[in-house]
Length: 171
Image (cartoon, rainbow, N blue to C red; front, side, top):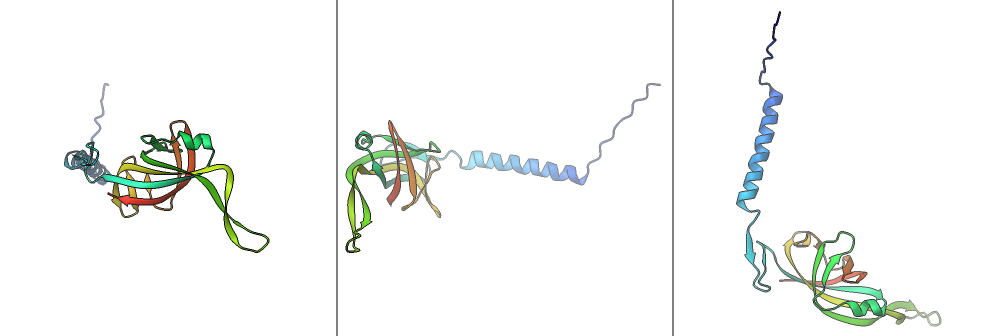
């Protein structure tokens, strides 16, 4: 009465496809791990070990219409992060603070002129970071894409602001 039914397993097409996918994924993972994921070099500018293919990127960002107290907090050597994604943007190398100006129309004669905005300042920062040049732009080591003309939201130690990338210098 103790009949045990043996279940026979037969190899079918679905099993072959599943086995091929698993083997291909394992081979791809091993190839990625041993053939190039950890290739690093020493950057000649900074002396820091960086992934192969990266180089020092310098770019200029202008933050617009900041209060004087905020503008004065920005200092050389600050590490700057993207405000929403918290990705490292680089290190501030130079800072310049100027009164904020806007383009306005003179209603009397119809001409346009720049007028200073009271108690507001624009801050121009030169930032350096490690990155790679790709078809779509400069990709920093943190994964952030930098393009001239692109808008940025900057977070620094004790301050934040919004502005634009004015220029990018490829190292």
